[in-house]
Image (cartoon, rainbow, N blue to C red; front, side):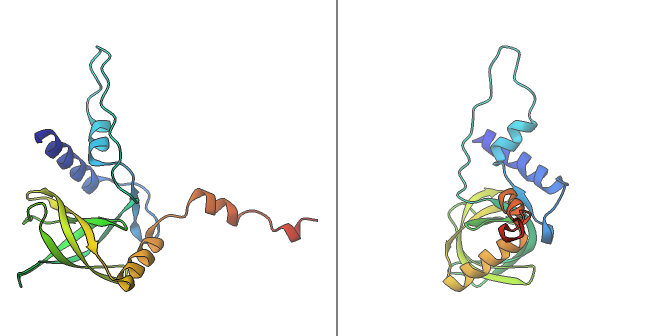
Length: 175
């Protein structure tokens, strides 16, 4: 358990300090899990030939680095908390907050970024005290799901396959 927490903290610090190329809208795909990233940054394996354990990615869809505002309200309470989310996918987001909630806490969430507003229900999946929380989206209206898909389409970089398709000559032009 302590190792998972340390790996999560290492991932969050790397995410906060990572630089590099960004896609339109400032998004960067986040392709590795906290465990994979922390293992990649760890010291090399000892000379005894042991290798780090392979960790399977658990996410169903890619995450993209994107900053936006998050309004959180624990279900059954009127208290609202405002924070910043720093990455997002079709199934969840990571919210940076010093006051975190325990895993399993049900939330009402309002996210805003790049002119999009998404309202959904969610559940805290992982809690890093004084750093933030990973939140899974649990219930979302079709309208909000459409807004989320539009936001992700706007911030995600074009795929290599699609980029090449657009640069192929038209058949009618080649005779």
